[in-house]
Image (cartoon, rainbow, N blue to C red):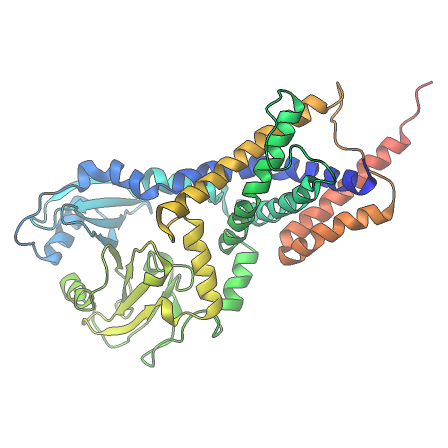
Length: 431
């Protein structure tokens, strides 16, 4: 085994040690979230299913029923695509929690209430690590960067080097060759998907994502310019439009001089513009702010948001075609990441990537457990020579420049590695 191979193997081992538990969690929750629509429909069906009728009640009657059933502030409503589904209102309770209130659009009768978000929102919070607090989102960038390093170093280790078996197929022989082949071949076929998931998950990261947001959104490469009637403003709290997407996230328009509108007037204006259903209409608390209706679509090119004044006039109609090139690329990556852009094949491919992460993690752990010396940690021995270390750094440093938090974690790992090796050199030799 040459020194370069040993050096790359060592860092592949440490990269896996650092991030595989997190990757397994992200893969599990991400795989579940791919079926968000089906899960939500199944769980909400008992309160969301209604009997269609020839006429509908007034939207203001829907709103009155929702307010009567659930004390608090109504912040948005979901207008369903199906005729046999209730209108869903989101209500912020006095304690800050939110609940869904389902109202039959034909009778204005409340059919039931549930906690907002439900199971899939919890899965989403775990997937983004937001459930552990704002600081935990920092790990997303670190894990994604190290996942790319894992794939890059794994590709180097996989390279045949005159080996004819265990390259494209898995040897059926039980034991370490089987696990090694399973690990290598799975990584070969799924490595591209894993890198894609890591890169397209970055817009949600706390450092890289925020920096890219500022660099892209506020330039012609990102968010389209606001109409002459006003300028984009960042909404606060519940006034932020729901479902507006990454490019238009949190953006609203102010139209001074207009009184607070009524739901019926705004919904009539949205329907005149033929916005595809389902859509979410965000109801602002600021009487001068526009109401925002966002289409809940599965393909990025169908993205559309209407900014409606309280009197029913449309202040802006923003679609995917108006996004800058960088925003289009990022939005496309997000929809593909979520498994909706290319239909069922897209979802299956992303699911296979999530499964592959578990296969790689389990097979890697088994290989380590079988080869480790008894009573020792069993990390690959570091080869001597600065050139070999430079070769490894040549693989990982470009990713660390692109993802600063990954670079910082790499520096910490290097310092710890040097400290461990120094301690070993200082140990007294047993006589």
